[in-house]
Image (tube, rainbow, N blue to C red; front, top):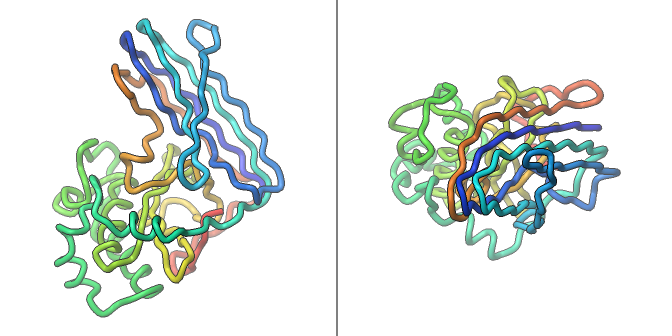
Length: 268
């Protein structure tokens, strides 16, 4: 499979702003080939970048702006073949079963046991995915950046990250390690960066997408972490910025795979 992705961003910063950006496809030694180009400019001048390595092959690009700036970012990548499935360390299995900022599994434990008390493994994975898909409505712009899984459940609506946070919290409540993964998702409509959940069963990470909006087989990992606080595509480390333009594309060179929500899929 050949997957082609791109992202164009324009944002404005105030003085003394430091930015961490996660839009590059994650490193994976299994790809047959991967070519990419990243350009970050201010008034046509290249901005110095530092690439930082994160968990699961993720890469952040760090930049600093002493003066108020309008920044233009252009990224494109072409990936052929499939990556090596992500391994799981004992520490990761501990980290990803704990409650976190946006996946409050401790608060949702009674709900999880009431809905999925006797389920385990693959059966639990499918049940959580289908339950979240049935309980929530996908409504663009319906959630706030501060909303976690509990707020999402109360409001019964959200965007992809909200669906993923709720699934992650419910799985962690049942002692299944789960994490949020940012991806490029060919076939997604409306096109944007996409967030899905990954859950670990018997040492293997399986991707679930409670929104059902794109085929998982074609997705490309950007980064992964406890929740969206670890995986935001653009964040500041001092100062502030305002996003003016965001355009994302993702497609496959051949026929798009069909999505079967009952199938176990590994993100690669």
